Amino acid sequence: MNDVLPDEVGRWQRVEQVYARTMSLYGYREVRTPYVEPTGLFVRAIGETTDVVEKEMYSFVHHDEPLTLRPEGTAGAARAFIEHNVSSREPVTRWWYAGPMFRAERPQRGRYRQFYQLGAEIFGDPGPGCDAEMIGMLVGFLRELCVPDVQVLVNSLGGPDTRTRYREALVAHLTPRAASLSPDSQRRLQTNPLRILDSKDERDQSAVADAPGLHDFLDAGDREHFQKLRELLDALGTPYTVEPRLVRGLDYYSRTLFEIKGAHDKLGAGDTLVGGGRYDRMVADLGGPQVPAIGFAAGLERLLIASELAVSSRAVDALVAPIGPEALGPALVLARDLRAEGIRCEVDTRGSSLKSQLRRANTLGARVVFILGKTEIDQGVVQVKDLDGHTQDTLARAQAIRIVVDRLMAASRSVDSRPPTAGNGKETS
Ligand code: HAM
Image (tube, rainbow, N blue to C red; front, side):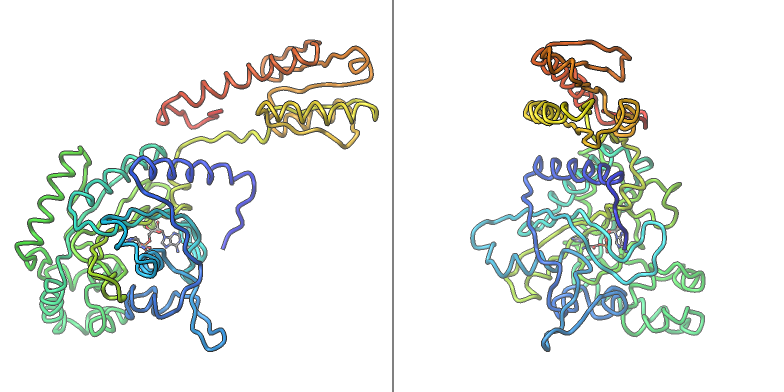
């Protein structure tokens, strides 16, 4: 579980802003659900034999009530969707969320025990139109974040019947090979055989190499759904790869399944940035109406490792430097007036020397220093030191404010109008 210190928070906020904007462009509305839910919700929604439920949940009993810190956002969103009877008010619901999730995993680069997800769920649309739109949207989002080497993997798991028939065929194939499987997969053979397809263990990989393919078990409806998804992704110009062995770790999926990877050089094996898929049975399984659903979640820390989007580290635009104790009051007033014009500024209230205040301005990344001493106050002027242009002018107070406001606003506009991919990895504002 990590602290995020102020120097890093700017990048977090930038990614969150791009995400919130993307979501609103696509008609999603934000939902906020609790960080703690009844343990039974996750067991039912995610599946008793998944790694998340078996090994990774932070669960505790409070006044005889088993509770769990949410390991993901889908189960809570589905619970809220049912509890508030949302489907009676709208035929299609598009929700997004952002926040911490908790899994007791072995920590490594890009894998933490408290991590942040940016997620979304659509309830009420059986797809595949919204499936394709969601995947296309995510590729656009990752491009806007300047994530290199984006790769989309898609698969179809088929409906529940397909899963059952495939499961039987897979168990029949693996049972004679059980002795050569890893101990984990020997256990999974009884509980959750599909997960063996996903195993990174070489023994498991060779045992499944010639296993029957899931796609041979899809029924006509599943095939049509998947074929249409592919056509729509092509229509959107979204590149993808069909990965027939993609299964993912949560049990609730049916039909469309996808993962988006990127920045392999930086993330290595943990380069899955986004995971998602359709879960058409969950709402009904949790006691709600028969409502199909699809969603995804992206790991924010992983996006930050992968993203090459540069973000300004300037803490303020301006520093107000009072020289001498009598200048402190006028300096506080000047700073208040600057802030009213939208200028981010700090007053150096320590009573330190001009030299030390200029050092402080550099550390903060200020573009301008307003210097106020007794002489300036008596004459109603202020010295404006432009740290970018290396100039210094004595100006009437009101004129100084106007000139600096115009200059700083122009500088921030020229940054805002730059296309997001034009960044060179250096400063952007
Ligand atoms: P998930 O694949 O378990 O799916 O997680 C989604 C993403 O969260 C991963 O691709 C990864 O980027 C990030 N993530 C997961 N675990 C960790 C961790 N321990 N540390 C850092 N990042 C992590 C879900 O959670 C589903 N709820 C997605 C979904 C929504 N499916 C349908 N709707």
